[in-house]
Length: 186
Image (cartoon, rainbow, N blue to C red):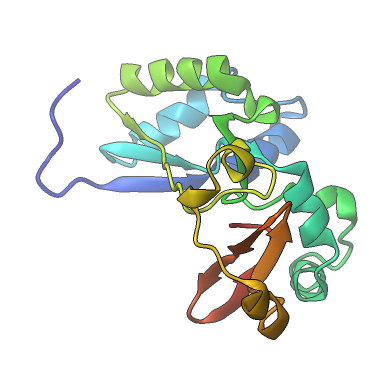
């Protein structure tokens, strides 16, 4: 594989959406293990140096449950998908339970296959690792709570949308300056 260019073009793909759309088009389940060659050829014709497969990591069932009781999320989902049902919510790609490829996307073996197929077309693969976007049920919550931004009882009392208690610890939820706290993400 050639070294990176000085200003590479990286094409971001929402992996879950991309595979689901292909599955509907092809009328059979597509995972990272069986992406049709013509779809990968389409990427090669874009003349990109790399593809960023965003959101491949294992998502949290607990995060999905939290998301499904958030009225703001439900309103957003229904705005985007008027016939939204709870089964449509696959969870946030940044509510990571484990840094292993989600089985529904083809698992680690599927990713290895996709990487090989991309490399055959001269395309590099980019994945993200964002250790400050983790699910409430990620193992570090119990094993290494000091990895997280924490709060105290006053923070939880004064701002219950930004702080959550899990076990004996109070954690800060993920936050963006322009949006409310991401209650499913620590």
